[in-house]
Image (spheres, rainbow over the protein chains, first blue to last red):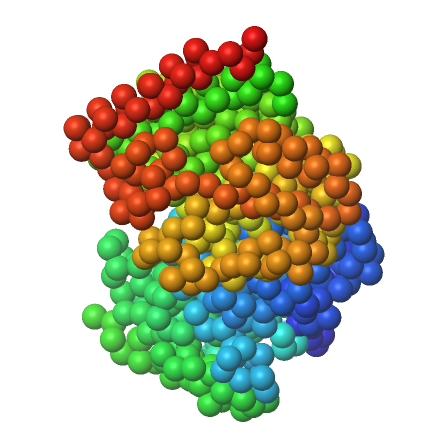
Length: 314
Length: 285
C-alpha cells in the first residue's frame, strides 16, 4: 500500500459520492471550497452547495437553521475557523439543541505547513469534545475519512470531523474496511506497551512499532478515529493487558486524545500514560517533514516514549 | 385592519403583558423591559400571520418564528401559552429548576419554540438558514424573527444580513425592536447602531420603519413584506421598552430586573385597566 492521499481529498470525494445517495445532504463553505475540497461536491451538485463567504459564525448558525428544515448540512472551513472562530456558534446553535449538523474541518494540526501558527489548529479536539453530545472524529487515512463521512450522514446529531491537508499513507482497503462510530481499531496487537493514535499519527505510530520491534519490544497500536464518544472499553482493556500507554496526536497534549485516554484509564485501570503531541506551544511555518521533526511527532520519539512508559511500569 | 381584528390583537397583547409580568415576578428574575416592548408584534404575528398549530408544533411545513433576542423569552412563552402550545400554569415555573421554560428559549424542550437562542446574534443566522431550507426544498413556509436594537452590535447580524440578501431570502421577515435602550444605557451612547434603516438598505433589504405598538402599521408592514420579492424584509419597530407598565417604560433599569410584590401588583393593575379599556372599546362595533 504505497498510495498516499490527504483525508481532505477523501472528504470532498465522499461528499460528492454520498450526495448522490442522500438528497438531503447540502454543503456550506466559507470561501475555501478549493482547499477544503467541498468544491468536488459543488461540481457534482452546484445547487446544493452554498458559499457563505468569509463569515464562519454565520455559516454555522445558518447550518443549524437548515438542519431544522430536514436537510443534512455539512459546514466546512479550516479547523481553526470552525472550532476556533465559530466555537460559540457551534456550542449554542448546534450543540445545545443537538441539531443534525456536520462540521467538516480541514487543515487540522501542524501539517497545514507553511501557513503557520494562525492556521494550525491544535485545540479543536479539546474544545469540541467538551461540548455535551458532540461526536468528534479524526480519520487516519483516506479510506477511513470516506467511511466516517458516510457514518456521519447516517448518524442523527452533531458531528465534528477533522481532516488533514497533507497526504498520508492509505492504511485500509476500501472494500474491506468497516467503520463503526465510537469503536477503536486495533491496527496491531502487542503485549509490552500500547500506542493510541489518531489521524496523521496512526501511520507514524505503526512505524514506531517497527522501530520497537528491533529492540525486542512488542507494541500494540490502536487507532482511535472517534475521540468522542471514546472507546473506553478497548483502551482500558489494553491498559490492563500491556500496562503502559503512549498517545500520539497532531494536537496540543492538553485536552486532546492524550487527555481523553488519561481520563479513561485513571479511575479503573491506572497505568503510566505518556503523551506525544505538541507540548503546549503554537505551531510555526515549515514543510511537513521538518515540522513533524520540530514538534517530536516522529516514530523515533514515539518509540522513545514507549520505552520510558515501560520503565514506569510497576 | 378592521376594528374587530385590532381589538382581538390588543386583547391578546394585554394578556401577554400580564403573563410576562407574572413570569418575571414568579421567577424573581428575567427581562421584562424588552419582553413588554414586543408584546404587540407577537400578538399580531401569532394571531394573524404565523401558520402554526399548537397540536402539531413540529409540522415540517409550518411557518417559523425565531426570537433572536432570546432574553425576552417571557414574551415568547406568554404568547405560546396564550395560543395553547402548553398550559398557562407552566408560566409560573419560568426559570425554575424543574421547568421546561428556561431562562432563554430552548427548542428541545419547549413546545412551539422553533430555535434555541439567547446568545445574541445567532438567531438571525438560524432564521436565514430556515428560510434557505424552505426555498431549497420548494416549501412555501415563511420565517419571522425578532432582533433587539442592542443586538445589532453583534457582527454576526451583519454577516446574516449580507447572506440573506445574497440568497434573496424573500421568505424571511425580521423585526428590529428599536426601543433605544441596551443594558449599559441608550444605544446611541453605548454603541450607536443608527441609522438602522440605512444600514439594512445598504445590505440590500426591503426596509420599513413603523410604530411597533400600532397594529395598523404592523399589518401594513407585514403585508408589504409578503409582497416583496427577491429580497429579505426588515421592519424596524419604534417601541417603548417596558411598554404598558408606567414605571418600567423607557427605564433601562428594568432591562433585567424583577418587580417586588408591590410593583407587581401595581403593574398588573395598570395592565388590567388597559385590558378593560380594550374590552370596553368600540373598535369592533
